Length: 145
Image (cartoon, rainbow, N blue to C red; front, side, top):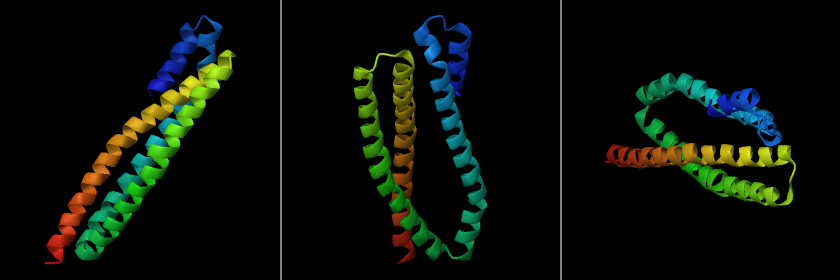
């Protein structure tokens, strides 16, 4: 939402060419983040009852499948979030050094800001998934006793 508000702010208050150049990039970044966030929210909200039903049907199988899912997700985070996103940020920063047109500069700066936001959110999500994975490991040990 912050990117969408920023886009409206640049549209209404932007007087310089550089400020006006931020309108479209911040609007695009805001829409992308909003679509991702809403998609994840509604997808996971629908899955909550599925998780409850699967746990009540067969707790051991549920814990095993969740362990596999959590470990796969943690590996994806290491590859995508903590490797690819920093590389993209570096590339955008390098592009900033070589371009001088306002739209390119605004696009790269907005992309960097969006990716940093994604890193912050995903860093928190990674910590939560890691904690969940540890709880699942403890639950698996308890069930195997």
